Length: 185
Image (cartoon, rainbow, N blue to C red; front, side, top):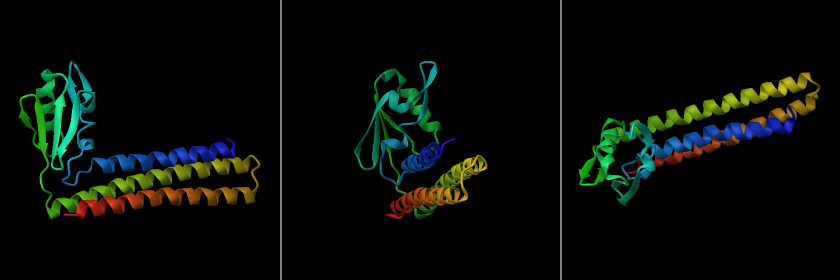
């Protein structure tokens, strides 16, 4: 594998855990209504499983309410059932063909729990980045056996560490922002 190909694989491989962490952070709700809390929820309807965002309009009419309006009114009960069985911890209120999710106020204890969840998500992302780093360093060692000079190997090794540190820093920055958001009353 060429050095350029190794480094493009490095960038792509390290971007995936960072993107995953950011996506998971968007699902952690802070008492503010956000469509991302429910849009990826699986709903069993029409004999198959579909994402909620594919079968309803999801809006936030005010900062404390998520409103779901199914495009097909006959699936309202299936959406309600999916919301009840999900782990979002919000009881849906059905008013005719509209489903409302009132966001509960977070207690201090729940805020700290959410911070711990965020820290766990961030650590998973860092582990993913370190895994990619190990894979890339192994590829560089294989290239070294094929004739890559020691100086070139050391330069590449330092560059891999710089890229690793940059991606870990992105996760750490996102974590501190999310913790600040979660702790804000």
